[in-house]
Image: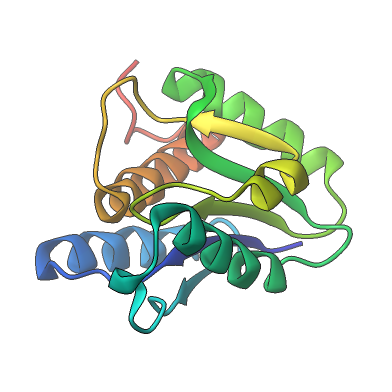
Length: 157
């Protein structure tokens, strides 16, 4: 089983890209993780937000296979402490037999088709962050979750 993080559009800020790369490298020590960036929709600025979400959703769902466990990073999702997220992650690692896929939507969120396909929804905060920042925050939390599961010193509880 592989953990995949799917995101729409490239990361524009170098500091975010460096942070994401830092945690992706650290995660290799614990579990295979793949970061998949779906390119921005060409001329997406000409689309309505709903049409853009539909097009992005279609591209996201093309990356998801039938048995994959899809978890949306969505403001309407469940919220966990880092320790609770580590336990959630362990349960998924124990029970999911295919890929565990986390997905970050575009600037306007997700299409109804992605909501319908999702197995779970997680929220990282009640605050709003850019979809680019969420990538960094989530990769750090994924790394933190693995260190908690291993009893390593990274997480100060």
